[in-house]
Image (cartoon, rainbow, N blue to C red; front, side):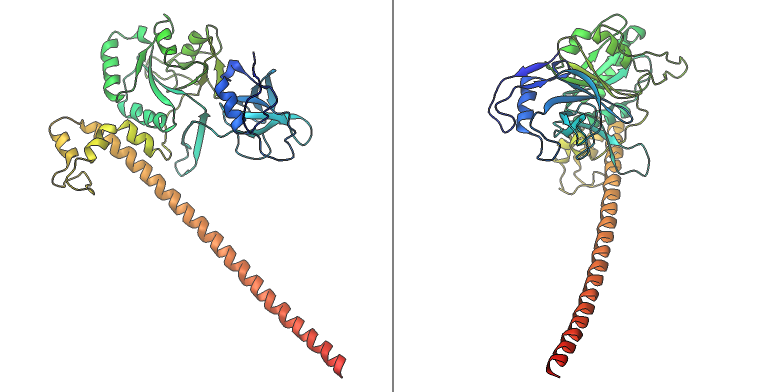
Length: 391
């Protein structure tokens, strides 16, 4: 299915019809976004580009939804590497083959620190997401720290966080679990679902805007694939059994992929994640721990370290039970993690600057010595020429 829009004011193709894949979230607003971001002027732009969206990344190709359906296309030859959910201009590469010619700026971006301990790079999981659904299975103990960590990343992405409780039909103490989740979700909306019994699905869809995209985040075996199948009304994802001993499941989803849902919404499935390292998520940290941020402003001293200083509002709240010690320790742990990453990034930036500075000095020194040598040799030649001329 495709959607077309007639001429509209804007910098991009004002006198042509812009087509895009409505099944994958292409709306009139998206069309205007394309018009506001025309393809850059380079040799792959011919003026007949169309709108597309990245559905999945494969090893050597990009699966893209365009006006004519799905296509496996080469990666763009320049600009940022695409990720699942990116809006892209489709055209032809230098060889004349259909290709992704440009990636549009991302309106939202869900990322995490790469899994390697020493890494200081971000791994972007998906782009242009409207709702991040943090999946919490009811058939295993709740990890408040994991929930808070994932919600910090969800807030920081620019999308709206939503907690989705799955497998409600398997738990006898459903109300207790829901109460614990709401306590630790810090005001984020919570929806309880059962894919097996189709419970809570209509309520979940009410949280996704028309043509919007929802990404699911959760551990392996959390029921994401079953939930997707229930929402899509067909088996689009393989499901696997969960071990009864530890509640862990095998990875039935191996890549991030967009799945169209009835009614025009789009769902992004993601592989189960064992850990979620935060990357430059200060804004998300402030949103998730807004209660603590409010207390910081009530301390007697502006530079309060919230440890043993007199007049500390945080310590007072911990003492009278208004703030849970685990909640405070979770904040400090995430804050220290982000601070450590920032220090590594600063150190890497300093090393890169020093290397560049040293290279510039070496090049400048070589250039200066070369200039002096040429000047000296030139002077000698000019002197010899004058001597021959006057001799």
